[in-house]
Image (cartoon, rainbow, N blue to C red):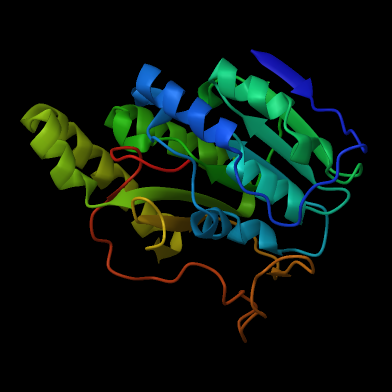
Length: 275
């Protein structure tokens, strides 16, 4: 496992709203064609999906927080997180693909982050992270293509996420719409059955821990972001001063959080787009 602190380089100026360079798209497509099982998409996430995944960071407690991003790809979500985090916050990025990890090491937006934001990159799978170091996170953002995996592996990863979250911490992940039918038609009944079994695991966790969901139609293909919360204590989270969230409602929750809606067909990684 490669585990390193990413250096801050102040000679770069980070744009206020970054978008993936054409090189990111080409790299992503190349890796998707080479290893679609682990990449799960053909292009990086669109900006609206990125913002939906970053909601727990843009609506946050008024103290330094620790964030874990798993499956960062070429870094479209990572760049957004680095822009909205505050001095004193920590961002731990886990990316198993060595080509994606190398791109993250060279990313100028990440290098231009505020020097008070700690950034660590682990070039490994989330299952390989140490379990005995006592580290916990306030927020986990997952870009893993769950429906490319076996149901037992998905359950293990979600259980690990819950153990890694601090009490009351939040998890976001996304899935594409309408991919169960597409999987059955293109991959046959056996893979279709595995796909449905993974969706059942996801729905069980959403029923137990879910806070809401948001459909992002302006993504290719349309996707749905999910927000879950770990059991335990809960501080009042409010919008970050430099973020796009709306003011909190009367219950202290930001109204820019995903809202509930029909579950529909939504999976992570069975159709081309996003990460």
